[in-house]
Each structure stands twice: as structure tokens, then as C-alpha cells.
Length: 578
Image (cartoon, rainbow, N blue to C red):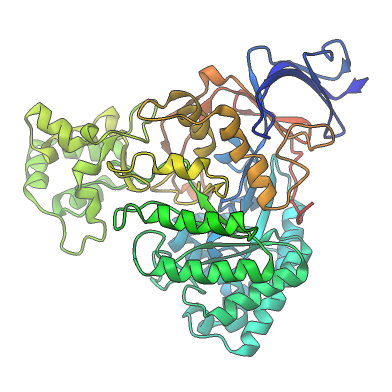
């Protein structure tokens, strides 16, 4: 038999959740043409053979929660997701994106994305090559791009509302029946052109750069249900959302959200996929919400919570923000350094500056007081630690050292030439509910997501969720029970692909798309995040790489080898379910 690629003697974790087995895999015409347990293809005629002896072979990961809507127009790799085994990325989440759009609203949409997802507006303005107005035109533009991995997208509520209602939509005014009918028409048009669904956001934590909540935050049921019915009429598409109360900002909201989401999923038959996380305002509320979703799931109603693989937290330091960021003497040192990190470190090492900063208090207008909570701030470390024990906090370390916590933290900020990063978990972290994430991950109703690849460029770097699910949960965890490797792989391959109807991928089987990872599982390791200035115009972002991905394969072509770009561009726009 002739193959373009043979992966020989690998330990296959096939995405179904079944026990791993040793096999050879033969690829032809971008598809898996043969899977032979025990081997048998090593002598086949092949253009390339990858010896996977001692390595794990998985399906490519399907990441259903990214924000590459602008980046896709300038970055064919979609970094950093490609470095973490992702071969299909779904963007357009949380109601934000760049189509449909009139020319007059382009910069407004950039401000919306900047405010909600912390992607530098200047980078988006310089990097996006506009060539569309309607959503189908946006899909056509993506279709023409060279890509290393596959990408699909939602029709975003914010863009649709602003396109239909103008300033009324941007200001979250109620939609008229005529507005709603046109929005539903545009959503159906987008889905029928190939969008994977529709997305919206209802949390007041999501705001445009001007401080206005995302259009659709307060949308009434008639608007939401009309759009859901548009998906039903099209016969395809997921209804994705960040629900009100997801961050603990409104303790009464989750019950209201569960009520209408359940009714919408039952009425339309379309999957409603909503974000679910644990928060300190009501640390055990996630259990009740998960139980409600589980009851719907078991009754055949397609209501699916989307959960992350680790706490959602900020990376703090001199290059981002920290416990001293609003103190006058610190701000003066930042201004004098004019963006030069070495100059800032030198200024902060001046004993007079040090004394002044430590003597001051936070600004009374500080919008992030949680940065000063050193009992919840941790050394990130190398390899990074995302499930730290409470006793590892900077406050507890300082106590053991017999030092004032802020005095201690000040010195740590200057370590590694000012490049040290610290972890301040905000959600999915409580010393009383250590297994919250694990319970959410292993539940059959949940989907793994919320990594936000491409977003939160200056504060968060969670696109590596996929790698972390393998390293921490399936191999390294000691604070509680681990997750079987086969289960971890299934959660980010077959399960995520199935939610979006992508039946051509997510498992290793004959006839499936040849999206694969060859992984040195024992040596797989996350590197610490680092600040880079590689966005258009030199704008900064946090990036995180990994070691141990020997090959990432898309449609039968190796796109990354040992984490490095091979130049292959087999990626494509994913148009609709299949």
C-alpha cells in the first residue's frame, strides 16, 4: 500500500476513551487510511515514516473557545494554540468578532474586542486586512488565507446587534420586532454560509474599551429565542455564551440563566454551550448548576457546560501589573523608564524609590484591589504551577521568612531581571474546593474550553489548557486524584468535536481526517509564559510554549516538528457540521 505518511509503533490514545494500544497509522490524501494494532505498516511504501516507539499518538485537539478573529488574518499558525496540539480552533466566542460590519464600525468593533478580550487595539488596527462587510464575505476571506491549522467561527451577537441597530444596539437598548427579525435573518445567513454557531455574552464583566457592556448583555428572551430559532431553522449551529453571573458578579443570575438556556435548548434542539466556573462569592454553586445541566443532558436536552482545565488567573509582574501598580512612586518609575524594562528594574532598585513605594498605599480608585491580596498570589515557577497550595502564597512565604509581605514581594518582582511572573487565581481556585475543576472536567455533560487562545494578551495565557490537561491531570497531579490519559484526550478531541458536529475528526479511525499529535508524553512540559512584542506594530502579548510535541499533523501534513513551524499550510476554514 502507498501512504503519504506512516506513524509506526506508537501508543495510540484514539479519542474514544478506550484503553491505549500500540499500532501503526497510515495516512493517504489527508485521511487516516489504515490503523493496524500491533504494527504491520513499517515496511509499507510511504513518503515519510515517523517512528513513534515510546511515544503517544492522539487525535489533534479541537479547541472550541478561542478569539483569533483578527489574528487569523495575519498569523497562519494561530500561535500559541498550535504549540499545544490544537489542530482545529473555534473562534468568535463571547459575542465578539469582526463581521458583519460596515466600514464606519470597524474601529468600534476593534474597541469592543480590545475591551472584552484584552487584545491591543493598535495591533488589531494595523494587522487586520479588511475585505468584507457581511458574515459570508468574512468566511470567504478566511477561506482564502494560508493556514497551518483548521479554524471555524461563530456569528457574534455584538457585531450583529451593532450592524442592525447602530448606536441603539451598541448601547444595549431593547430591540424592536423588526430589529430581531433582521438579526435572526443575519444569523441564519451566517450559519448557512458555514459558521459553526452563534455566540453572545451576558456578563457585565465583558465591556468595550469605552466601558459599555457588550451588545446583547441585556437582550430579552424574544431576541435570544428568535436567534435560537434561526439556528433551528438552519438545522445546525451551537448557541454559545458567557452567562450572567459566571464570575460571581450577580449571585441571582445563574438560576435565571439556567432557566432560559434549558428552555431554549429543549425548544430548538440546538446545543446551548455555556461557561461554568467556580468562584469565591458562592464557592459551591457550580455543583448545583452542574447538576441541573446534568439532568438536562441525561434527558437528551443539549445543554452543555464549558469548563477550563485550570484556574482562571492573572499573570502578574513588572511586565504586566502587580501589587504596587497604583502607588504613585511606582507609577513615576514606570513613566521615567518609558517602556524599558531594564531601566524600570534599575529605578526600583534605588533604595529611595524602594522606601517610597513601600511606604505608600494603593490608589483609592484602584480597580484591581485583588492584586494586593498576597495571600492569594503565588510564584508561578518553572515548570509553572497552576494548582498551588495555600501555604505557597507570597504572604505565607514572607511569614516563614519573618518579613513583611509587601517588602518580600517587592524583591521577588525584581528577580530574573524583572521578568518573574506570579499567579493570582481569580476563578476555579479555592482552598476548600480543590477538586472542583476535576469534577467538572470528568463529568460527561461538560466540554473543555475557555482557554481564550489569542485573547487577554497582557494578563492571561491559558491557550495551553490542552497541554496542562495532559501534564497535570493525566500525569503529575499529587494534591488529589488524577484523570486517566484516555479520558483527558477524549475530553478535548471526540467530545469537543462532537459538540460542533465535526464528525470527521476527533478520533483515530480509518476514514477520519488525519489530524494527529505525536507526543513524548513522559517529557511533555509547559514552559513558563513570557512577554513578547510580536503583535503588529510591536504590541506585547504573553506567550507560552511546550516541549514534547514531536509532531503536530493537519490533514496528513506535519505542520510543527518539535514545536517548530515546517512551513506546511494544509489548514482550512471549517464550514459547518459534517
